[in-house]
Image 1 (cartoon, rainbow over the protein chains, first blue to last red):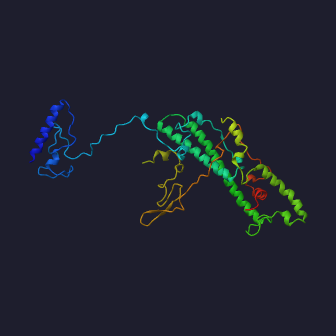
Image 2: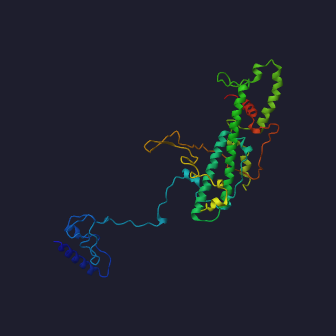
Image 3: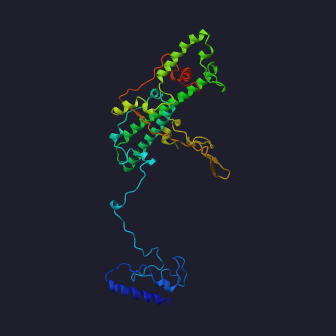
Length: 268
Length: 103
């Protein structure tokens, strides 16, 4: 019983060999002897009398393996050249695009990286509102992300240039971020001290009931002291308005005068 | 027996502090803070009020850049007469009275 499938396999393969001639490749996709001989068991699980796992297999007769191979008769797909593939659809407004300077290159050349100005000074940022500083901080964060992405790509490709320009640019952005922190810390300390000062100020009512601020001329109209104190207060107010103009709540960043000459002037 | 060359060449405290310099129980940390708490059985529970969330404000129409043109010289404040300068609480209060006065 055990020899019969072997003989049948040999007859089949020899016939195929004669017809094809010099073809030395395996012709049978799988061994037909296993199904006739015994119930199919995967390799390693077989425990027949002679303990031979490869009974009936022969490279000379090109029988193939005794166990089923994980293949089907369906024709395999053929690779398509890259230029014939349909274009990959991406979201043009995806947020990850902000990690790159443009859509064409992975990193800016050093000549482009070197085109930057100086960082903001603390005095320039003192005139900006909280919202402006908050947004400028995030603009800086995104710029640093862009620089870091370019650095990573440059290291990956081992380009060997551009580190110095990227470092200079990064230092300028970090200078701006440092100035933002300086301004906010300073403003917070000034606010803390101003609250202590306001507790002693008769014009300011911090208790929560009634108006918070009552100008002196409304409840001390008859006193001449008010007329004497007013000029002492007003120059301070004017000085404040001179040093910190346009910091109101409705400040539009597009109306900031420094942005216009910045866009017109060369950025080197 | 001699110490390593790193210890021979410089004063010891010029090296940065590691957990091996101090007795056990010292936690150096990564300056990042925790995001939850450990359980008795060795697990970890994330507490979402501890997890940091950074919200980027809308940047549409925002024209400021991290850079200022080099054509403009660096500007510094002139706070003559006030030793505290921009940190002056009187200045802050006067400006609050002039511009806000509400909250």
